[in-house]
Image (cartoon, rainbow, N blue to C red; front, side):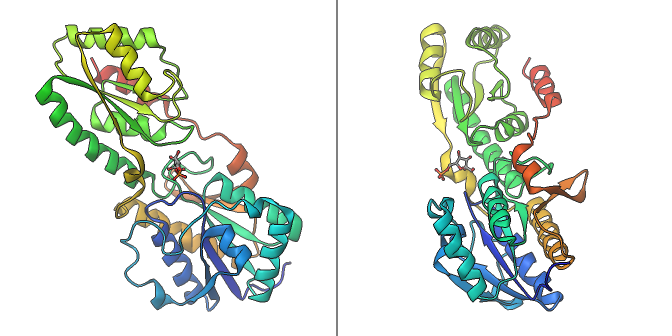
Length: 328
Ligand code: F6P
């Protein structure tokens, strides 16, 4: 039986994602509900090392559920990767009398939590927050749904100009090494082709599919490309290759970039963040640690941090099939 938890710290780390504030709010309010003190750590692991903390009460998180980004800021800390950095962080936690942490982020964030537990037996629970949805142990990460809506909205706009000019657009979306954003937004926005790292379509098949599209009477097309896809060296080279081989197409490229990480979270992300935030506090108070909370078949479930990091969240192949049928 670990020591009684009286004070819980919460931080966001890695890339920000819409809904992180809703998760922070849920952690803070759950702490209040269970009469436990709560401390916010600014700038992820870097703020932990520097002792950049703020006491948080239920009222400090008023009017945050609707805000994108993270009120606690975020960073990717190099210093925390060193033993010396982690020792500093541990001393800061001891000084502030923080007994356990809720870590909101992705793989890197959870790896930090695991190493920290191994070295100092410091308890933590992870909440998956990343637009990429590349975490094992949850059907959806916080921010993924909002990012999808942002991307679909952007592609709808691109479609207007693409169809007015009879153009072929390559739209690059984020996702690091994973194709979740591309696949789901591609189906949602009615893309002709979706290029993701998990499936190698091959250049010949892409050309063939675009030719077929033209023959079937389509005058404009949208191809969604995941940033991690390796079919071309990058989306611009891919576009050039297609333009050289299919001169009948006038090609343009649109890289959506960081706008995909911004904006007010969708209702889905707010509800998910609230549920995961409450559960993370309850688990810590129950003496649990080294777990990630996630959503599986609409139930909140836990996965060991180790598995969450090492396991592979696989794409839904059925979506690829649907996309093929839809793009006739
Ligand atoms: O992990 C979220 C993400 O937005 C990825 O989709 C993208 O590859 C990366 O972060 C970009 O990182 P940065 O904001 O450091 O450029």
